[in-house]
Length: 133
Image (cartoon, rainbow, N blue to C red; front, top):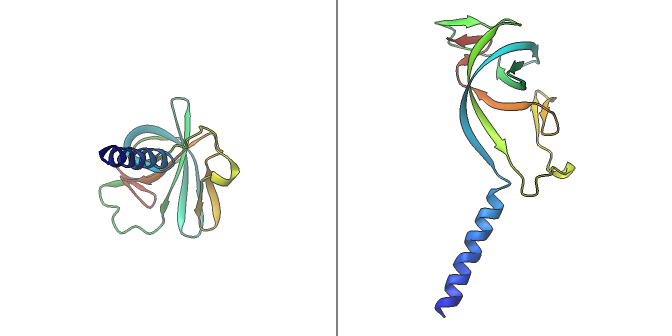
């Protein structure tokens, strides 16, 4: 009877580990990057940045209540960004169409997991077009 309990416990642990591989994991990263493109929708600013040999994108809301001690972002200038990044890892290493992750800003596709750039969920030191330095 004890063996069945252990097998049941091991099966549950294995299921949790396998299913968690397809879930997203968050982490905070600090990056010094150059703003390469600034775009917008009705409610969001969309930024493309580059650093080292990486390209990335993120968006922030246009509404901003606190721009004190901040500077306005400009294209082709390097800034220090603090991001919350979500890593998407899938069990088999391939990303079928069914599992494609898509990020929208006002019905506009900003990023998909098939793009060759990184998506950052949230910029922690920005408010609208302003960045705290």
